[in-house]
Length: 401
Ligand SMILES: [Zn+2]
Image: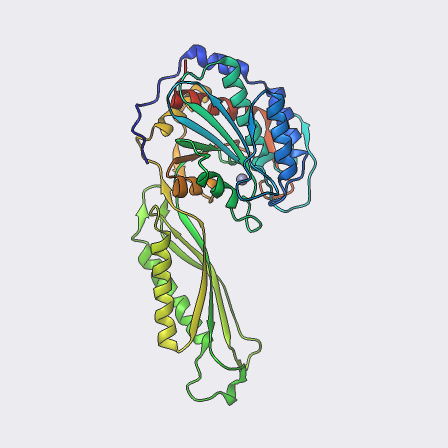
């Protein structure tokens, strides 16, 4: 993915200084705690979206609330326009949290705690503070910043319909930053991933092994054959590699068949994952998988059906992408060095932006811990760092003073 516009501008030391002075740790912490204080399990993020909208409106921003395919919790959108042409940088975050018992918000010894502190209300508060600092300093001279926040992220409760709808409805920048709990390395490649469930069946009822009809299809044997073919496929897929993302894989994690030891079963179920490095290859990968299943069904006289749920598409960021250069100059300005490049270990909304919007995503947020547990915690100083990096990336990418 590359952008035809010119290379990012170098950051002016006076502007770097102004942004860092404008970012207010106390205000950032108050925003984070106000968001954490509102429970928002996935599909029920309406109240926290309302809270974020109130905070932004009180700051004087014009807040849009597109329903974006989820009337329970309309999304929150704010734009900071320079009034001049240039790139638009999007800051996108999810307001929903995993379905665990609610942990109340608190601040202690420089850390913020509570549901969503790490994933990702702390990160959202950081990018809100970045937009405030950009506005207060008047430093954004070109392009715009687009802030979007939504529900329906965390699986298996959410299906990402709201971020997909936002993209379809045009709430999209030229590049996007996502403050997931990944501070190092900077992920510039990600594998696609699908979860599969295969169901191998035969006709008829379960039957005692000694009463089986001659030639009765053997679903367990078909399952074993399929598992072995998937292992062979995995070995062959080692050829499909990307220098950063890694390699293609197929993995079987569950195999279930039979009720008791001497009964011929009617159903064998196999579950696992398929991961791939080639961008936009989900359909091709699924077709290859379907062909393998059809072959096994034909050889064994069974019928095989399957689900293939794509969790995220693969992508790779071009080394010459201006968002990458802008981010690294911002990171160096804040911390003294650019980030090492690496792969993204998880699937996030960045995969969706790459596949559906065709824009470059960079997932970068606080070095927060405890995501998807009851023990989320994030250092306020690290959220301040994220706010500085986001604001300065916007200036380098869109064009600043
Ligand atoms: Zn997250």
